[in-house]
Image 1 (tube, each protein chain N blue to C red):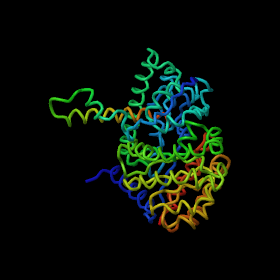
Image 2 (cartoon, rainbow over the protein chains, first blue to last red; image 1 turned 90 degrees about the vertical axis):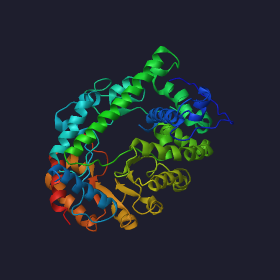
Image 3 (cartoon, each protein chain N blue to C red; image 1 turned 60 degrees about the horizontal axis):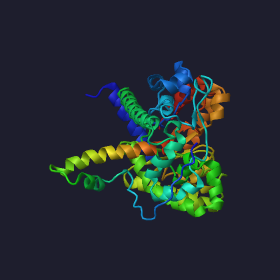
Image 4 (tube, helix red, strand yellow; image 1 turned 120 degrees about the vertical axis):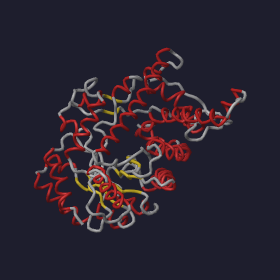
Length: 61
Length: 390
């Protein structure tokens, strides 16, 4: 067992349930999209929510 | 024109739902999770049903085909051992790997979350899970960024997807056989989330004295996460109830003040949050919850099915009856050590005493164990079906 720990960042703004990385943050990285933003957002949020469920699966098992 | 199985499906679903609404259906619904006993019945070793998910589900299908239940049981094993081996899980022992081929899985409880992790966990729990928790509980992820860790993440993700796909296929197959699903989604009391897989029992009980403010902050933080997970793991379904196994809230883990302060507020918030979305909860009250029945009665009408293990059922009916469905009632020791006649007599008495007004689902008191006799299970189901007619 590793003993790695982290400390709380008092400035951290944790994403809500179902979100690992908010689309707004991803959009900033992309620098905007040329086409329909909702299509990009929908795909991102679907897979990001799946990542969230994967991580919490190991807690709720 | 519906097929026979479609008609049976609807009859069973109506029966189950009416009882959960505290009403009186045509018959007392029967809900029994056979768990590993299904493997015994189907002739598989436990290693086979832990490692071969197709055999796991095939054993469940045998139960669906041969026992006149009203809702499909869980698969014999909720665990697919290969999925846990794929990431180097430190917390489970499985038949055929660490244990004899017919020994039930063992959970290796530990403090997988350390006291000094509380602040980071509370500040950003999802990030903490990836950065700290998974590397700690999965040996293959002990060195984040390594080839081994990357592969573990890929294997683990693929394994979960495969598990969910096969479970969904089984649910569809059992529905086609005329049996609806008894529960969708998994929920937890926030205190149990901390106490089960994160801090462990020793850790959480020490925290009650050494860092009680952290428990309160963590359980409050967990409320929306647990609501989300319960709904999302059900795929958004609200027809079947959420399954919520309840652990540390049983007598005598906590004293009444601790229960009121640390256990109940966040659990109540989760159940109310689910109910606000139309999702009912199977309040699977393992062990004895008699002292807390009046508090549980604060929940919205019909929002839970209160499952009786060692709780005083007479008191549960007195306090919760009419507003909430009760389930359970058949002791595991009777199924293991009693005769078929004793089981039949017990079931009749149980139905006479607690099911007459409706709002009752017959089930075993606690999670069925390997020592249950198959003839006794047939006696339970047959008696409930023939005697439990309104």
